[in-house]
Image (cartoon, rainbow, N blue to C red):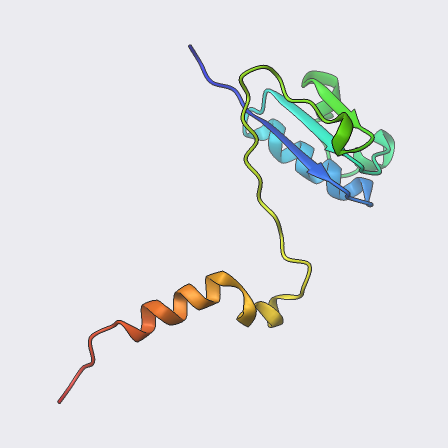
Length: 110
């Protein structure tokens, strides 16, 4: 059986950003796209979604997380962008991991 996947966003306020994600999802062959608590106007989003994803890929809009539903057998995998600018990334887990990796490198020289 061939697998499937969908791509979606939560709480996006700019339709153009949603349109960009939808265009990318369509390019990668997503089986569906969705929004949760997002502002999406198809005409505005279409400025970035040049493939007009909602015309060819099932598109679902959910008012909130309590309304959100995935297709049967589909698991949710989440990726969250940090709300802080990249300059404050020193506090992130990724930076701590990098520091740990650096501290375990063998020292060169005597």
